[in-house]
Amino acid sequence: MQFTDTAAGVPFVAVPPAHERPAAPVVVAWHFMDPPSTESALAAALPLDGLDAWRIYLGLPETGARGPGAEESMRRGYEDAVLNMFGPISDRAAAEFPAAYAALRARFGLEGPLAVVGGSLGAAVAQLVAIERADVVAVSIVSPVAQLRAIVAANERRFGVTYAWHPVAEQIADRLDFVARADETARHAPALQIIVGAQDDEAIKASAASLRDALVKQYTEPSRVEFVTVADMPHALAEGPDETPTSHAAEVDRLIVDWLRRHLA
Image 1: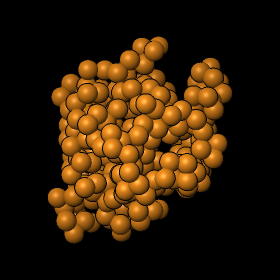
Image 2 (image 1 turned 30 degrees about the vertical axis):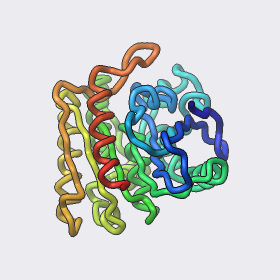
Image 3 (image 1 turned 180 degrees about the vertical axis):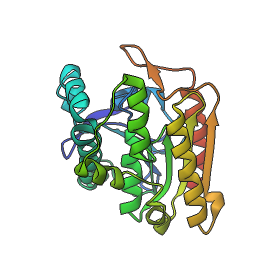
Image 4 (image 1 turned 120 degrees about the vertical axis):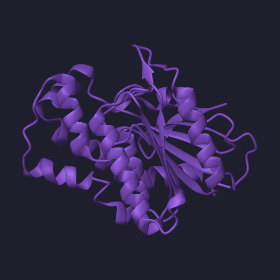
């Protein structure tokens, strides 16, 4: 069984735990901009099989049903990806989460501990929420935006473009530099797992490793930070027009379930 609807205007897919109860843990996840690029595609790629928890997948702003369409999204990205996409999507997603989560709690009677999961830009949202909320006890981020500048560098190589940095973009990049903000994450010190693909861009892998190093220095219990590299995995977890989960998605799903099972108990 799963529920598909909106909560405070945010589209979601919700899957109940095997044993419904008020104290069941809650996992909220945000999708990639690359495939899986919608809440339903992420639910298919990372069903978190075997985790006895509510699994709730939220749609990012300006994507899916709330998006302007592929052609307009591409135009905005080429015009100024930081100003038009990375900045506003992550900011709005983090800002709309409290109302959406309150609506979900009221609808489904959620009272259990909260974990957040995110992939790529969705990982930035998960980290923003973890910084801002004391009730997030565990985090798992995949192919993460650990430092926005690394993502921009990767996209420059991917699309053969050069991004023209400007003061507003620099401010957005500073907000989405979670290596520099490691002390803020460590304030509440949620158990934090970082998963990267061995075939992802070198800048993304390096920034993710820098995030691990920064968090280990800040956490009083460094064992609450885990870094995993998945062999042969690229950035995305799905492919094709129907966003079919890749062969690596099942391994990532297993890693996240194992992490959350340990830290949501």
